[in-house]
Length: 480
Ligand SMILES: *Cc1c(COP(=O)(O)O)cnc(C)c1O
Image (cartoon, rainbow, N blue to C red; front, side, top):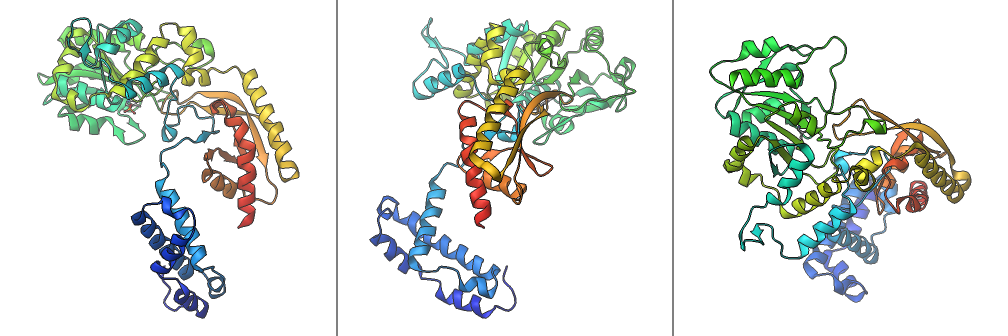
């Protein structure tokens, strides 16, 4: 932001800015520089000088006079920029928000078994599309096909890149150029711009909306059927609920109507729970098996929501319907990659023993941690924080709620115990900002001028890092 008129201090500072060559000469004499390829170094120096120029233009005359523009100082800044440019951008963060399926933080964490499978398949050749028994070409989908059928009761399965892709593929295969009947109450938008009407348009199918936002009856579907109707679709309102004076048509009734008219029924289930979680205190989410048993021709769901695996879109259902999807050219474009497939197979294998799955799949474990364990974790963290921060902070353990997140179980509030830390005289929003810039970045909730840390979403080793990170952020927040 260039101002119309510069103050004297600013002008002098701009004149003092060193030339690129001068800083480079300084760097060539110093240690540490030779390890950096020269083009990167030149770029870093240019960027550093540019950044300083912007600082000067933004500063007051007095502040500008105080900026250190010696070649050594500029060189240090340049090296920091080079380092930042060479560091990975995608990296681990600590999630202390308590939101388990945090879409912006990568949704599900993979189980140890899935990580191992992924690493093995990534670093070696594999039988991805090779049938070892026959010694000939095989199908990548075979590695999860049987498992998915066993876990859901379906006849056949297919896996693509994500659930949005699964819905697109299903609609394109079953209803391209034809009509699809959907209830107005189910025209969902899921975070990241997945909208049923838009996906429908993309697939080449025509959306026929029936009923109203809060009430749709079987008659509404029946009256909408024409010679052009190819499909009845149900969408699980996975990230919201229509409450109060409502009515929706149970899947069974839609299936009966479909049978009467020879129409398939597709359900976009969204979250894809394989195991009923109600015995563990969560509200009911229809399991994939329930929907297959209710007669859906195809059910689609995500791999990285309540299933707790990698990002993937899973389609299960009747053999002839899934086989038709496999022949659609889109399948090739949307196909799942080998790393995802390895992680998905390993995750699904854990589900063969549901008790084990609850312990080993991180998403399931986090959703079902006993409150006593959360309280104990919060107490340990609170003590460590209080000890390391001393009088600078007031720390206590409070009762709170964690969210499931990821557009799943929208009404569920999971009781938890959180550590609440107040820092008299320090801005908590500024602290939270500093915490995001550290290694690893620490993400948490800010509530009523306190930092809130929920142990539910911490992974092994996180808790021990937190006091140091908060101490570092305190020092930085004060230093400015
Ligand atoms: C989450 C969700 C999607 C999108 O799934 P992705 O795997 O994120 O592509 C689609 N439909 C419903 C109902 C969902 O809940």
